[in-house]
Length: 152
Image (tube, rainbow, N blue to C red; front, side, top):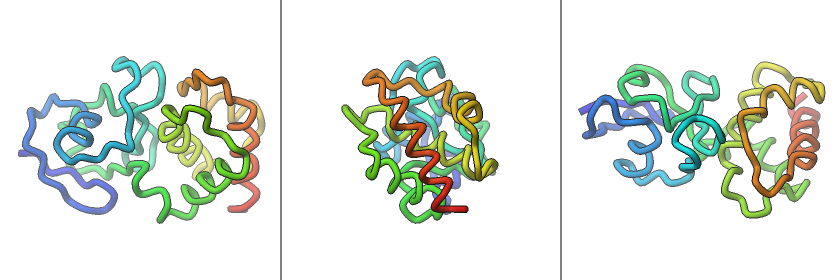
């Protein structure tokens, strides 16, 4: 049994300590907002926050997260910055297929927590590990800038 703090609540996970956070979330806790994309930390679909930092949950074992704070897409609506990002996503009609969007939102939220006025280069750098197969990158950038204005 591993105790994980997820979205402010301690949760018991009955899994091998080497189990990636992604699978503990999806398979053990039925939290399906975090998506599986590549399994190699290359696409960003599985992005969650570990102590506020965007990480790839598909390669991070639950043993590395014990005693840490994990935040998932499910908690973003109740978070000022996360909610601003989600609202901007809607205003800019960012999602097409939507599969990558939870990871995109998590990366954008982590960026805006540390940089309230990101430049295009800052956004490109922060979002470079998140792939959108639909190619909505211009809308993603516009939504991040919009969200930054609302939280400023």
